[in-house]
Each structure stands twice: as structure tokens, then as C-alpha cells.
Length: 484
Image 1 (cartoon, rainbow, N blue to C red):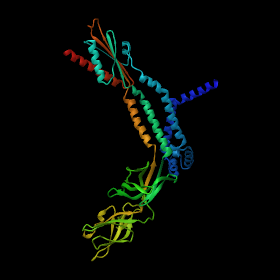
Image 2: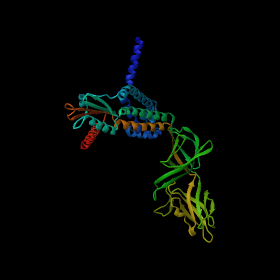
Image 3: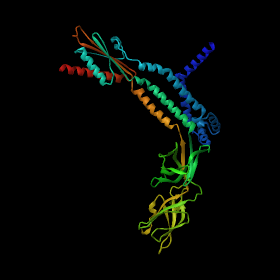
Image 4: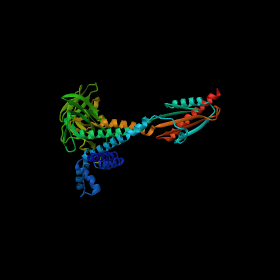
């Protein structure tokens, strides 16, 4: 018996500890402080980046030591660390225990039927109003009953000799708002834990025309996708007359079991999602020493046109003419030097690509012209012929952020439920109203005395205004009856 009692006492002690509000506050403080560290320190980043960041706070000599300490504490991948997830689980248990501990009492209050109250008790309520009317008892009862019904109250009635009492309540379920918020928090935590446990964040660079079936985390560990992704092309759009990118996009094709199942042009705010894995456009670049195809749109005044894919040194003929062209040079970023007036390449990046084409026409000497991709008018030739430089395909790659978060749907559901719970908690209250109607004087000849009292769990000012409106409606109704 003593052992059973000790065991019972231990369990009760653990239960009380888990139901403690102090425990909830302590866990919230730990989560908040660790989240601040997780915001300052870049998660899952290369060591050099975080060491340089820590050097600003601790100095160059001490920064590597601090970094190693942070790694052992799990701060470099904090949201996946065992201790952070453990605190989330402990906070979830605390919420569940608190709810189990308090919900039965709350439910009793909600389900407890409202009963009549003595006039003295009504006068002691937080909200109370008293009026006198020259009418009979039945008429006053009818107009108050109607006014309460119009305010969406389900009215009950109790009669005594010389008096009638109306009583009603509304919004009892508002007391459950806090528990709905608790459920939403649990769902958000569950979604976060599912995302951490079964999801990933990675990246991959795919050359134009290239295909991959894996992505890579920050430790260069490959993560199988379960399908293949091909980059058909990559393109950067620049603001006019400057080298600042306005938009960059890629056309991705998804192959599953060798079959094309999806194709989409993705942009920064328009990702591609397949089987729960999302590909975000995040970066781009030029492949070192890559040799690609020059994509040219050529057309003649007669309307004949053709798209050509050519290598460096290859020739072509504008359809319907005798004009020949041959690719002789290329620049990633062509401009004219202000001092020497010579054409120069000012960047290794494809910020202003241009192709040099040597043209040959009957009756004219050969000449070479530079055609710029960003300035199509540079391809307008004599006699109405046109050569548009569309792309130098196969020399750039698209940089993609790859993410899988199977818990995101649970998190969204939790957020939706939280919005409902917060609305109920802040804007809906449990309101109770008693109306005590009694005949003053004897033989039913005196005025009618009405005492209106009520209580509310929140928004007392609004509740008082509601009672004032009910009384005003009643007074107007009685005036209308007296004029008839």
C-alpha cells in the first residue's frame, strides 16, 4: 500500500509539474532565446561563413573555438537538433496536460443551464439597468422577449406572483477559444517536427540541356529525388541600359520513370512542385570553358524565316536570299571603351552577350557586324534582312533551391485553426442576461419596474451598449403600443 501511495504521489507530482504554467513560460523563453541565436547564425551554412560572422562578435582568434562549441550544441542546424525538437515535444505535452486539467471545469460551466436569479442578485451583477414603464406586466414581458429574440438570444421564462423573469445566455462556446488555440499550436508543432524529420533543404545547379535526379545538402551529400529534372533553357532579363537583372527564369521538365510528366517555366516567385518537392529559382551562372550553340532567328524581307542552332565557325544562309553569314567571334559582355573607342569585353558573366558574324553578299565586300542579344535592332541588315541573336545555349546553368516539407500542410491547417481560435477568444464572449419584471403597487395599478442585469467574460463596454439597445427597443415598442 505504501509503495502504491508513493507511486501515486510521484505520478501526481509529475502531472502537476507538466500542468504548470511556469513550465510553459520557461519552455517558451528557451525556445525564444534559441530562436534568436538560430536567426543570427546561418543554419546549415558553410563553416567559413559562420566563422566570419562570429569573428565580428568574438574576434578572429576566438571565432573558430566558438564555432566548434556552437556545432556541438547543435546551433548550426538548430531546428533539427534533438534538444530543440525535445523542447517542442515537452511544450506540446504541457499544452495537452493543461487542457486536460482545465477542460472539464470549463465544459461544466458551458453546459450548466442558466437559472432564474433573485432581484437582489441581479442588482449585484457587473452590468445592471433599471427602468419604470407605465404598462401592464404581460405587455412589458412580450416586448422584452421580442427584443431579446431579435438580438439572437434563446429566452427562458419564470413566473411568480406579481413578477416575471426572463433569462438567457449566448456564446458559451467562446470559453473553448483557448483550447482551439492549443490544438492549433500542437498542429503547428507536429507539422514542424514532421518537416524536420522527413523533409530536407538542398540545392542543385543544372546546365542548360542537363538532367539531374539528385540534389545536394550543404555538406554536399546527395539526396535522391525519385525522379529526374531537366533544364531546357535559362534566361536573364535585365533592366534597360543597365546590367542589373530584372528577372531570371528557367524551363524545367520533370521525367518520372522515363516519361515526361510536367513542364514549367519557373521564376523567383513561381516555383515548380512535384511529389511534394519544390524547386525555386535562386541563382544562375556561366559554366567555365563551356562551348554552346548560337541560337539565331534569321529572316528575309519576303517573310521567310528560320531558327538556326550553330557552333562557332559554322556558316548559314538567310532563307530566300544569297546572303551568307559565318560566326567568327563571341563576347559575354560587349561594350566600347570610352578612351580607346575599341570594343572590349568587360565581364566574364553573360550580362551583355554579343556574337560577331561575317557577312558575304553578292556585289559587296565581306563585312563583320556585332549583334547583341539585349539589343535586337543591332541585327537589322541592309535590304530588310534580319538576324536576331536569341541565345548562346548550353553555357549557363540554373541554380535551384530544392525543398521538401511534408509537414507544411499540417502547419497551414494549424494556422487556420489558430485564426478561428483567436477570433473566438478575442471577439466572442459568454454573455448572460436576466430581466426581472415586477408590478409595483397593489391590484396591478402601479408602474412596472424592470431590472436588467448581465455578465460577460469580455468586452464589457460592448455588452453594456447591447443591453442599452435592447432597453431602447423595448421603450420604443411600449410607446408605440400606448399610442394605439
